[in-house]
Length: 366
Image (tube, rainbow, N blue to C red; front, side, top):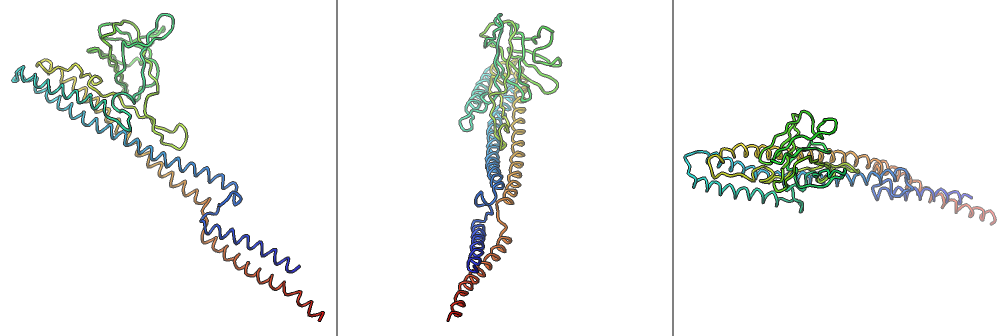
């Protein structure tokens, strides 16, 4: 019986010694689900969250790269617009002849072509950034009289600010390149606020409001249409950047089209003094628009930098929390290991002593 009792305790201390040795060797106090079933479930969920946070931080950094790529191209467009503005001011001076202005106009045409080339060729990972591909989608529709909406090319949206809400916006095309606000049966403007102001020039229709709201439309000269047109603005078409570990945690990047047409410079003519004088205001408006788009890119970049900082901080804190669940306390576990190591040695000694007891009985028989 002494041998059996000593053997049982020796087995228990050996099992505990092996578990302690396993924890010290791996560095984890959770090496299998039997160590702590609840802790194992929590730790695996936290591991997934940590991996997602790490990936989200990298995605946000990619968002910074996207905005910097677009901003770099816009900077070059800005420089060319400044040059065009300089040439317009130069050509407006009557000390220059028509031949001089023809040379000025030739340079401007080439600069406009380069602006359009940059608009079409600026890409990030094969995604074009400045040609309108990452702008929210808009569709122009007309009512055919039966209640059905049909797409029309009579008018297209060339620019809108990021804070314009999705929805339906109504315009009345007058057929001469101008437009007015469309109203519903109750006399309310469709989509636009009562404080909005509409202006038309050279088949360009601009709607602005005091809160920074701005939409611009281009009336297609080749489509002769008069009447109501509804512009359907959807929250699709932008570039979503995943900045969180869970579904729906993303930031949309919206970049309007930046080209000679979108900047209302496609019909620019600096071959005459009058044309140069008129172009100064148009170019100034274009420079202001490019400045606004660059400002939006800077705001996106700053937001992504703050996002990366927040994600990295969250990742650090969650890693510390996970460590408290799965990592072994080496000092504490070493104490446990020493305790069971002593108990195992004592157990081995006691088993040896127990095995010697029958020999004493044999001595009595002698």
